[in-house]
Amino acid sequence: MEKVYVVTDSTADIPKDLIKSLGIEVVPLKVHFEAETYLDGETITANEFYKKLEKSDQLPTTSQPSPLDFVEVYKRLAGGEKAKIVSIHLSSALSGTVQSALLAKTMVEEDGIEVTVIDSKKASYSIGIIVVGVAKAIKEGKNYEEITELARKLVAETQVYFLVESLNYLYKGGRIGRASHLVGSLLNIKPILSLNEHGEVYAIDKVRGRNRATSRILEFFKDFAHNKPVNVGISHAANYDEAKRFEDKLREIFDIQDFVITNIGPVIGTHVGQGTVAITMYPIE
Image 1: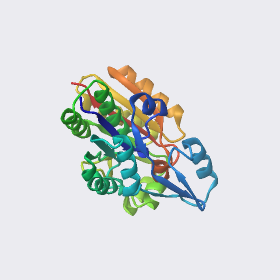
Image 2: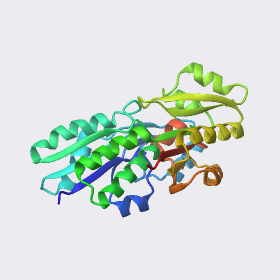
Image 3: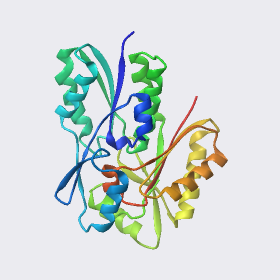
Image 4: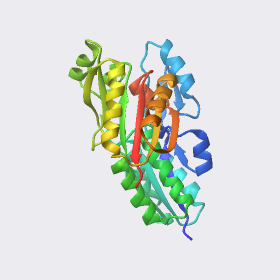
Protein backbone atom coordinates (compact mmCIF):
# COMPACT_ATOMS: atom_id res chain seq x y z
CA MET A 1 0.00 0.00 0.00
CA GLU A 2 1.31 3.45 -0.91
CA LYS A 3 2.54 5.65 1.92
CA VAL A 4 1.03 9.13 2.06
CA TYR A 5 2.44 11.94 4.22
CA VAL A 6 1.01 15.30 5.26
CA VAL A 7 3.22 18.37 5.66
CA THR A 8 2.19 21.79 6.91
CA ASP A 9 3.90 24.84 8.38
CA SER A 10 4.05 26.28 11.86
CA THR A 11 1.32 28.84 11.22
CA ALA A 12 -1.24 26.02 11.36
CA ASP A 13 -0.89 26.28 15.17
CA ILE A 14 -1.63 22.58 15.73
CA PRO A 15 -1.15 21.41 19.34
CA LYS A 16 2.00 19.35 19.86
CA ASP A 17 0.12 16.26 21.00
CA LEU A 18 -1.87 16.14 17.75
CA ILE A 19 1.26 16.70 15.65
CA LYS A 20 2.87 13.70 17.34
CA SER A 21 -0.12 11.34 17.44
CA LEU A 22 -1.14 11.99 13.83
CA GLY A 23 2.36 12.01 12.32
CA ILE A 24 2.10 15.55 10.95
CA GLU A 25 5.32 17.11 9.66
CA VAL A 26 5.67 20.84 10.43
CA VAL A 27 8.05 23.24 8.66
CA PRO A 28 8.66 26.34 10.82
CA LEU A 29 8.49 29.94 9.67
CA LYS A 30 10.82 32.45 11.31
CA VAL A 31 10.24 35.38 13.65
CA HIS A 32 12.80 38.19 13.77
CA PHE A 33 12.58 39.96 17.10
CA GLU A 34 15.02 42.41 18.69
CA ALA A 35 18.01 41.29 16.56
CA GLU A 36 17.26 37.62 17.25
CA THR A 37 15.77 35.07 14.85
CA TYR A 38 13.51 32.34 16.22
CA LEU A 39 11.90 29.28 14.68
CA ASP A 40 8.14 29.62 15.15
CA GLY A 41 6.99 27.21 17.84
CA GLU A 42 10.40 25.55 18.12
CA THR A 43 12.89 27.99 19.60
CA ILE A 44 10.23 30.35 20.97
CA THR A 45 6.84 29.38 22.38
CA ALA A 46 3.64 31.38 22.09
CA ASN A 47 3.76 32.32 25.78
CA GLU A 48 7.38 33.47 25.56
CA PHE A 49 6.59 35.47 22.43
CA TYR A 50 3.63 37.37 23.89
CA LYS A 51 5.60 38.25 27.03
CA LYS A 52 8.35 39.72 24.84
CA LEU A 53 5.81 41.48 22.61
CA GLU A 54 4.15 43.13 25.60
CA LYS A 55 7.45 44.65 26.74
CA SER A 56 8.80 45.64 23.33
CA ASP A 57 8.34 48.88 21.41
CA GLN A 58 9.59 47.16 18.26
CA LEU A 59 7.23 45.15 16.05
CA PRO A 60 8.71 41.76 15.07
CA THR A 61 8.96 40.68 11.45
CA THR A 62 8.44 37.24 9.96
CA SER A 63 9.79 35.23 7.04
CA GLN A 64 8.79 32.10 5.17
CA PRO A 65 10.75 28.83 4.95
CA SER A 66 13.11 28.52 1.97
CA PRO A 67 12.51 25.97 -0.80
CA LEU A 68 15.49 24.02 0.58
CA ASP A 69 13.76 23.79 3.98
CA PHE A 70 10.92 21.99 2.25
CA VAL A 71 13.23 19.84 0.12
CA GLU A 72 14.94 18.59 3.28
CA VAL A 73 11.61 17.61 4.84
CA TYR A 74 10.23 15.97 1.69
CA LYS A 75 13.40 13.91 1.19
CA ARG A 76 13.58 12.89 4.83
CA LEU A 77 10.00 11.66 4.78
CA ALA A 78 10.61 9.70 1.57
CA GLY A 79 13.73 8.07 3.02
CA GLY A 80 15.27 7.47 -0.39
CA GLU A 81 12.13 5.82 -1.77
CA LYS A 82 9.18 7.02 -3.82
CA ALA A 83 6.66 8.93 -1.74
CA LYS A 84 3.46 10.91 -2.03
CA ILE A 85 3.07 14.04 0.05
CA VAL A 86 0.22 16.49 0.59
CA SER A 87 1.68 19.85 1.65
CA ILE A 88 -0.88 22.32 3.05
CA HIS A 89 0.15 25.88 3.87
CA LEU A 90 -0.59 29.42 4.96
CA SER A 91 -2.59 31.58 2.55
CA SER A 92 -0.46 32.73 -0.38
CA ALA A 93 -2.06 36.18 0.02
CA LEU A 94 -0.33 36.48 3.40
CA SER A 95 3.00 34.73 2.84
CA GLY A 96 5.37 33.28 0.24
CA THR A 97 5.32 29.89 2.01
CA VAL A 98 3.21 28.24 -0.70
CA GLN A 99 5.63 29.50 -3.35
CA SER A 100 8.59 27.98 -1.47
CA ALA A 101 6.77 24.64 -1.27
CA LEU A 102 5.95 24.76 -5.00
CA LEU A 103 9.60 25.35 -5.86
CA ALA A 104 10.62 22.48 -3.58
CA LYS A 105 8.09 20.22 -5.30
CA THR A 106 9.90 20.68 -8.63
CA MET A 107 13.25 19.99 -6.96
CA VAL A 108 12.26 16.54 -5.66
CA GLU A 109 10.33 15.21 -8.66
CA GLU A 110 13.41 13.45 -10.07
CA ASP A 111 13.72 11.55 -6.79
CA GLY A 112 10.29 10.00 -7.33
CA ILE A 113 8.65 12.19 -4.70
CA GLU A 114 5.19 13.37 -5.72
CA VAL A 115 4.01 16.47 -3.87
CA THR A 116 0.62 18.17 -4.05
CA VAL A 117 0.93 21.70 -2.66
CA ILE A 118 -2.34 23.17 -1.41
CA ASP A 119 -2.92 26.83 -0.65
CA SER A 120 -5.22 26.70 2.37
CA LYS A 121 -6.34 30.33 1.86
CA LYS A 122 -6.39 30.31 5.67
CA ALA A 123 -4.24 31.07 8.73
CA SER A 124 -3.68 29.65 12.22
CA TYR A 125 -5.93 26.75 13.21
CA SER A 126 -8.17 27.27 10.20
CA ILE A 127 -5.21 25.63 8.44
CA GLY A 128 -4.70 23.24 11.33
CA ILE A 129 -8.26 21.90 11.33
CA ILE A 130 -7.82 20.98 7.65
CA VAL A 131 -4.45 19.33 8.24
CA VAL A 132 -5.79 17.34 11.20
CA GLY A 133 -8.72 16.12 9.09
CA VAL A 134 -6.30 15.03 6.35
CA ALA A 135 -3.95 13.33 8.82
CA LYS A 136 -6.84 11.33 10.30
CA ALA A 137 -7.89 10.24 6.81
CA ILE A 138 -4.32 9.04 6.16
CA LYS A 139 -4.47 7.02 9.39
CA GLU A 140 -7.72 5.48 8.14
CA GLY A 141 -5.91 4.26 5.03
CA LYS A 142 -7.33 6.62 2.41
CA ASN A 143 -5.29 6.73 -0.82
CA TYR A 144 -3.46 9.74 -2.26
CA GLU A 145 -6.25 10.79 -4.60
CA GLU A 146 -8.82 10.60 -1.80
CA ILE A 147 -6.54 12.57 0.51
CA THR A 148 -5.90 15.40 -1.96
CA GLU A 149 -9.61 15.56 -2.78
CA LEU A 150 -10.47 15.75 0.93
CA ALA A 151 -7.88 18.50 1.50
CA ARG A 152 -9.38 20.65 -1.26
CA LYS A 153 -12.90 19.96 0.01
CA LEU A 154 -11.98 21.07 3.53
CA VAL A 155 -10.30 24.22 2.21
CA ALA A 156 -13.55 25.09 0.44
CA GLU A 157 -15.82 24.20 3.38
CA THR A 158 -13.90 25.62 6.35
CA GLN A 159 -14.98 29.00 7.70
CA VAL A 160 -13.16 31.25 10.15
CA TYR A 161 -14.09 34.45 11.97
CA PHE A 162 -11.79 36.31 14.31
CA LEU A 163 -11.66 39.28 16.62
CA VAL A 164 -8.54 41.31 17.36
CA GLU A 165 -7.91 43.50 20.40
CA SER A 166 -6.28 46.12 18.18
CA LEU A 167 -6.02 46.63 14.43
CA ASN A 168 -2.55 48.15 14.82
CA TYR A 169 -0.72 44.89 14.12
CA LEU A 170 -2.66 44.11 10.95
CA TYR A 171 -2.21 47.69 9.77
CA LYS A 172 1.52 47.92 10.53
CA GLY A 173 2.09 44.52 8.92
CA GLY A 174 0.34 45.64 5.73
CA ARG A 175 -2.58 43.19 6.06
CA ILE A 176 -5.28 45.91 6.15
CA GLY A 177 -5.46 49.44 4.77
CA ARG A 178 -5.44 52.74 6.61
CA ALA A 179 -9.19 53.30 6.22
CA SER A 180 -10.07 50.04 7.99
CA HIS A 181 -7.55 50.82 10.70
CA LEU A 182 -9.03 54.26 11.37
CA VAL A 183 -12.63 53.04 11.43
CA GLY A 184 -11.80 50.27 13.89
CA SER A 185 -9.94 52.64 16.18
CA LEU A 186 -12.94 54.94 16.67
CA LEU A 187 -16.03 54.61 18.85
CA ASN A 188 -15.24 51.10 20.14
CA ILE A 189 -16.11 49.64 16.73
CA LYS A 190 -15.13 45.96 16.60
CA PRO A 191 -14.70 44.57 13.10
CA ILE A 192 -15.48 40.89 12.70
CA LEU A 193 -12.69 39.67 10.47
CA SER A 194 -12.46 36.70 8.15
CA LEU A 195 -10.48 35.48 5.15
CA ASN A 196 -12.03 35.70 1.69
CA GLU A 197 -11.80 33.18 -1.16
CA HIS A 198 -8.37 34.56 -2.02
CA GLY A 199 -7.11 34.17 1.55
CA GLU A 200 -7.06 37.92 2.23
CA VAL A 201 -8.14 39.51 5.52
CA TYR A 202 -11.38 41.48 5.31
CA ALA A 203 -14.09 42.79 7.64
CA ILE A 204 -17.35 40.92 7.22
CA ASP A 205 -19.17 43.16 9.71
CA LYS A 206 -18.53 46.00 12.14
CA VAL A 207 -20.34 46.21 15.48
CA ARG A 208 -19.94 48.21 18.66
CA GLY A 209 -18.43 46.27 21.54
CA ARG A 210 -16.93 42.83 22.00
CA ASN A 211 -20.12 41.18 23.33
CA ARG A 212 -22.10 42.17 20.26
CA ALA A 213 -19.28 40.91 18.06
CA THR A 214 -19.38 37.54 19.82
CA SER A 215 -23.14 37.27 19.25
CA ARG A 216 -22.78 38.12 15.57
CA ILE A 217 -20.11 35.45 15.07
CA LEU A 218 -22.41 32.84 16.60
CA GLU A 219 -25.20 33.99 14.26
CA PHE A 220 -22.88 33.67 11.26
CA PHE A 221 -21.93 30.14 12.23
CA LYS A 222 -25.59 29.12 12.75
CA ASP A 223 -26.32 30.16 9.15
CA PHE A 224 -23.14 28.42 7.99
CA ALA A 225 -23.66 25.04 9.70
CA HIS A 226 -27.32 24.49 8.71
CA ASN A 227 -27.88 22.27 11.80
CA LYS A 228 -25.22 19.77 10.70
CA PRO A 229 -22.66 18.29 13.11
CA VAL A 230 -19.44 20.28 13.03
CA ASN A 231 -15.75 20.17 13.83
CA VAL A 232 -14.53 23.27 15.64
CA GLY A 233 -11.21 24.84 16.57
CA ILE A 234 -10.49 27.96 18.60
CA SER A 235 -7.09 29.63 18.53
CA HIS A 236 -6.17 32.54 20.77
CA ALA A 237 -3.32 34.95 21.39
CA ALA A 238 -2.81 34.91 25.17
CA ASN A 239 -6.59 35.11 25.67
CA TYR A 240 -7.61 31.69 26.95
CA ASP A 241 -10.51 32.99 29.06
CA GLU A 242 -12.33 34.44 26.07
CA ALA A 243 -11.57 31.35 24.00
CA LYS A 244 -13.16 29.23 26.75
CA ARG A 245 -16.23 31.47 26.84
CA PHE A 246 -16.59 30.98 23.09
CA GLU A 247 -16.28 27.23 23.57
CA ASP A 248 -19.07 27.18 26.15
CA LYS A 249 -21.40 29.17 23.88
CA LEU A 250 -20.58 27.02 20.84
CA ARG A 251 -21.27 23.79 22.75
CA GLU A 252 -24.71 25.13 23.74
CA ILE A 253 -25.64 25.68 20.09
CA PHE A 254 -23.81 23.12 17.92
CA ASP A 255 -23.38 19.36 17.72
CA ILE A 256 -19.59 19.42 17.97
CA GLN A 257 -17.92 16.16 16.95
CA ASP A 258 -14.31 17.26 17.34
CA PHE A 259 -12.99 20.27 19.24
CA VAL A 260 -9.51 21.77 19.64
CA ILE A 261 -8.35 24.84 21.54
CA THR A 262 -4.85 26.08 20.76
CA ASN A 263 -2.46 29.02 20.95
CA ILE A 264 -1.91 31.41 18.08
CA GLY A 265 1.82 31.08 17.53
CA PRO A 266 4.46 33.79 17.15
CA VAL A 267 4.23 34.26 13.36
CA ILE A 268 0.48 34.80 13.20
CA GLY A 269 0.65 36.59 16.56
CA THR A 270 3.03 39.13 15.03
CA HIS A 271 0.29 40.17 12.62
CA VAL A 272 -2.79 40.01 14.86
CA GLY A 273 -1.43 40.86 18.33
CA GLN A 274 -2.40 39.79 21.83
CA GLY A 275 -6.04 39.25 22.68
CA THR A 276 -7.05 37.84 19.30
CA VAL A 277 -9.52 34.96 19.25
CA ALA A 278 -10.29 32.99 16.07
CA ILE A 279 -13.06 30.43 15.65
CA THR A 280 -12.89 27.87 12.86
CA MET A 281 -15.60 25.44 11.80
CA TYR A 282 -16.51 23.00 9.07
CA PRO A 283 -19.70 20.91 8.78
CA ILE A 284 -19.60 17.12 8.72
CA GLU A 285 -21.65 15.44 6.00
